[in-house]
Image 1 (spheres, one colour):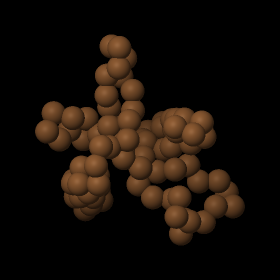
Image 2 (cartoon, rainbow, N blue to C red):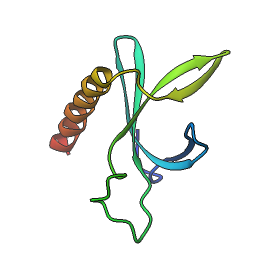
Image 3 (cartoon, rainbow, N blue to C red):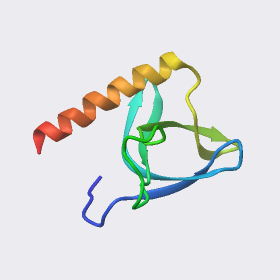
Length: 96
């Protein structure tokens, strides 16, 4: 994805009805599943050390023919996909 036009943002609503603004980072496929990585959008007075600032990984699921983003099913799935994103993002930084 080219950042020629700036970052891409997405607003999602969690199960409690809270809206989260996420900045798209990257997408990968693993075992036939599509995963997308995001960072929470930072407000000017926010601190990156805040516990809410970290990589958010969601997977694409199809519900009634419509693609939706969903949380991962297990800690093991999250750990595996997190490692794949970390490798992919690290490789991209090295190639720049």
